[in-house]
Each structure stands twice: as C-alpha cells, then as structure tokens.
Amino acid sequence: MSRAADRLRLLINHLDPSPASIRSEPTFAQTSTYSHPQRLRYTFETDLLTPEQRVFYEENGFLLIKNLVSEEDIDRFRKAFERICRQEVKVPGLVVMRDVAIAKSEFVPDQKAVSKLQDFQEDPELFRYCSLPQILKYVECFTGPNIMAMHTMLINKPPDAGKKTSRHPMHQDLHYFPFRPADRIVCSWTAMEKVTRQNGCLVVLPGTHQGTLQEHDYPEWEGGVNKMYHGVRGYDPQQPRVHLEMEKGDTVFFHPLLIHGSGMNQTQGFRKAISCHYASGDCYYIDVKGTTQENIEHEALDIAVRKYGVEGDVHFKDVWMIRGRLVQGERVSL
Ligand SMILES: O=C(O)CCC(=O)C(=O)O
Image 1: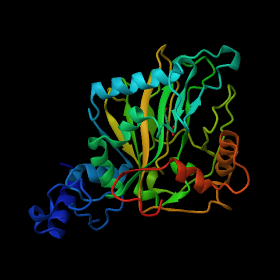
Image 2 (image 1 turned 90 degrees about the vertical axis):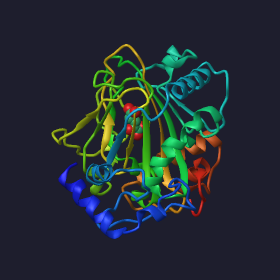
Image 3 (image 1 turned 120 degrees about the vertical axis):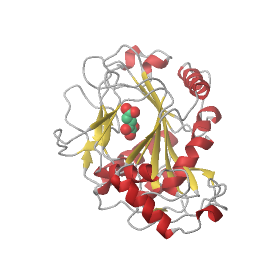
C-alpha cells in the first residue's frame, strides 16, 4: 500500500469508528452512507473503492477497472451497433457521425462509414450499458446515489486514411456540459476490444482534473478535424501523458476536467469503445453565456435546430434535458 493510501486508511478509520453498522448494501441510495472524509473532494465513501483507489482518483482524475464488462455484453453491444450501421433499425435522437476523411460519395451502409454513434439513449440494447449494475456501483462513488446518464457514445475509431483525422484532440469533457458541479460528473469508457497505442487508445494528462476549464476550439490540423472535436487551445504536447492500454471489458472512469484524447488508429481494424457520461441527479444547469463554452453552445444549438427543426426558444440546457435519463435514485434537478 502506498504511503498516501496508508494515511487515508488511518484517516477513514479515525472518522468512522463503527464501519460495520453502516456498510450494508452500498449501491442503494437508501442504505448507503456518503461522506467526504477530510481532503477527499472527488470521491464518496461507499465501501467499494479501496483507499488506494480513492487516493489514485483524487490525485490523477481517473481510475481503470479491469474486466468490468463481460464478453457477452460487449458482443451484444457490437451486434446492436452493426444493426444500426446496416440501417436495420432507426433510433430516435441518434446521431451517426462519419470521419471527416470519408467523402459523402463513398457512403455505404455499414460500419466502415460510421466513426461514432452519439445519443443512443433510445436504443434499449445499447442503453443497457448505462444501467449495468457493476458500472453504476463505481459511478455512485463519484456522483452519489442519484444518477443520470447524460451523454452516450459508441466510438468506432476507423483505420486512419493517412490524414491523421482519426485522432481525437486533447480536451476536457466539461467544455460540452452546461451543468455543474464538475466533481459530480464522471465518464465511464469501456474498451470493446484490446486497445493499444497502435489502434489509438485513450491518452490522459494525470492530475489535470484539479485545474480549471480551459478555452477550446478546433485544432488547426492539415487533414481536417471531425465535427465537434474541439481541443484545448494552446495545448502543450510536452506535458507528461499516460497511454491507457486496455483489454476488452476494461473500463476507465474519469473526471470531466481531465485533459484527454486519443491517438491515430494505425491498424486496419476499427477500434471500438462504448461510453456514458453520468451526472448526479442533484446537479444543476448553468448559463454558459459569456464563458469559454459559448462556442460549443452555438454549435450544439445549430445542430439541434437542423436535427429537430426547432427554432427560436431552444436553449443549451434543453438539448441536455432531452438527452438525460435517470438510471438510479431521483432526478432532483437535472
Ligand atoms: O474514444 C476516443 O477515442 C476518445 C473519445 C473522447 O474522448 C470523446 O469523445 O470525448
């Protein structure tokens, strides 16, 4: 055990003299106890995370759990994805994205043309991912007992066509979200196959969740950048980074201020991952006018107007209220 974890165990034991009496059924809102022992700002005590894991997340802003989602579930998500790509099902609200390097004329209805699905909350099979009990048990450690699934994605990173467009620029997810507090938001990202540096694994800058939200914009990449792929402006590529190589079913949970992205896919295969951003049902919406998030607000509203044909009185907050689904506890204010 690390010295920090040792100190933490002592601290927790010190603050919680009768742990046995409060530690039954920790995943249920009604029975679990939530406390933030001193100096622990990002995680709750729910009896699931070890002191070492809590300290790790507090210091680094991410936590990787091996083998959390079964092969069987992942294979079912893959089949659901393929059905959507073949246009056998139509999912309300779903956004199907294609890599900027794939010209419209090359359109073929299969997964080769699809780089990402967003907003699959109306697809019962894919949305099952967001309600998996083993995922929610961890999510609860960051959000608390009321949990909303706010944003869903299945990322199908294509083999790079030589223009480096398969990269995802380094960014903070909070840039996209008009709700707070940031510490009660977490992303779960599950590898649907082995992910390596070769096929473009996630890259994170440990500890950056302790900073503030930075300005984001489209990076000036020669080969082009995918729609909505904003990156931290003035990002310094010399900063220490960690490549998260993962096996199928491994899942990483990370804070929305953690700077992260992913590299080029230099293989011939498609690198798949499924993810959900969760927020506490007690989070609240903010007005992003006059903040660095105004650029993404405009873009998101433009898309909503085109997609739903709504004009005028639609706000950034509405776009998120429509997407959000309660997966545990109560929808208090989101
Ligand atoms: O899966 C990836 O390549 C990165 C996904 C990501 O960071 C995002 O979509 O915000």
